[in-house]
Amino acid sequence: VLWPVLVPLAFLALLLWIRNDVRAQRVGPVALACRFLWRDYDPRLLFWEVVDMGRKLFLASLVLFIQTDDGSSKLLRLVIASVVSALYLAVLALARPFKRSADLYLACTANLLLACSFISGTVIQLCESDEDMCKTLVGFKSERGASEFVIALTAAMLAASLLVVLFKTVSAVRMPTVRLTSSGRPPVLELSPECHFHGFISHCWGTGQDQTHTVVRRLQLLLPGVRIWLDVDNLDDVGRLEESVRDAMTFLVFLSVGYFKSFNCRRELYAALASNRPFIPIFEADVAKGGASIEALKAECRENCVEAAPAAYPNYSGPGEMLARVFEEAAPIVWVRVNAFQLESLKAVALRMLLHSPFYASRPAELADGVMVPGQAGPVAFSGPVTILVCRGNVGVRDLSELVKTAAGEGRGSTASAEAVTAVVIRDAEEALEGANAAPLSGHVVFLLYLNDKTFLDAGGVVARLVQAAMDRRIAIAMVHEQEPSCGGVPFANFFQQTPQVLLQQPYKLYNTVAVPLYPAPAHRKVSLRLVLSSMGAVPCDAGPLQRRWQLLRRHIAVARLVRRPPAEPRQEPVVQP
Image (cartoon, rainbow, N blue to C red; front, side, top):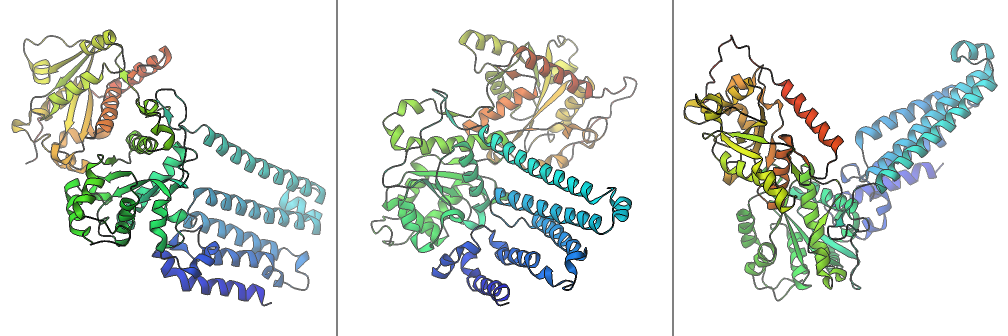
């Protein structure tokens, strides 16, 4: 009697005692001793182990107190157990208390099998008590038929569970991983004798926690076997942060607002300086996600990294030393969370970690060409002549079109590259669409629209008029959205205010076409240009005939979706928003 009551209460009391320390990452002796109660769960759901223990106690013992005289021959216990299991499964799926998704999937699968077992027991109990009711309500002629059905159902559930496990295993094996561009082989992840981790990632909990978790989990998938110190996985005692920094070969710094204001983050920085660990700065640029400009982060560093002779690094000379190591020793890697761009950020982090490994320190030539991931956005090219229309009133589009034209010849030999570039012709949209003596358009024609803070705000509304004219002639619109604020980048929502209403409504619906983001970092910009070319109909340089035909079919379908306005209907002149 005492165990099912006192043990859950003792666990609850322990969790109540340590909850503030665990959530603040101050793991003391008591929290360390009972970490088996909280380590696998999200800090917001710290008490889930007690909830799960209550469910187990109820299903294993407390349910026996229902109809104590003849409950074993009745259905009520099975019905209540089925309802409890189903409700717990629903709560589990909604609350998602586990840190790792694999633990959540396993728990949901186990509870689903348990609920099915109770339901199957209800069927057998019903058929055992009355064969006529069994035939009427369930559909089986006898108890034997019901038992055979339950056995078959159990076997099917087990087989389905094994198939799910097998599918996830195969998916994990076939997951694209980082490979050396020079040889196509996976990199060697060798550790220094004095270290147990390839990297230590330092971040501010308030503005960088989600991003750093993504960085680590994705790197663990891309670099199987990599060991990165992450607080939620490896922090046992916040007083041993400096020791943890020394136990890693590299020091990854995730720069976001408030990072240099954090006392523990500065402790980690001083420890990295004292142990002379290579710095790998990662820069969050999205202000909405806790980012800031490099200048703002430098100012924050100057203001806060002013300790005199900190305990971890008594020889610290001041903010200048910190600025040199964090910002000047190597350019910060821009963190972009969008699809192919995220992969480029992760590849850059992986490459820098490999460059500082003892194995490649003596073999730098193997990393000279960088790293790659199978399936990444590669070079693309047009299969025929292409005309790109640009509008003079669309500020910046001419320079962008030249970049697109140059990218069209990327990845070919010198002769093929020159032919690819000459196959792309850039023409003035106003002259091509409205000029009296304009030469006829030939080949595949695309209108390039550069979205920035000045788009559709030109005098006279020439850009909007030409976009409308291009869509009337079923010319595909390729839109590029500038992301750098200093180059005119603004949130996409601004364009719904700048764009004339006629282009937002039927039959045009301009923004039904996805705009390609244009990022400033060289690696990300290269991917942006490749995606722009793909939106214009280019195909991968290594594509076979079947893939080229499929891309051509997609181009025809996209053009067919553009609705031509009836010739007799006068065109509505767009009104530019002030």
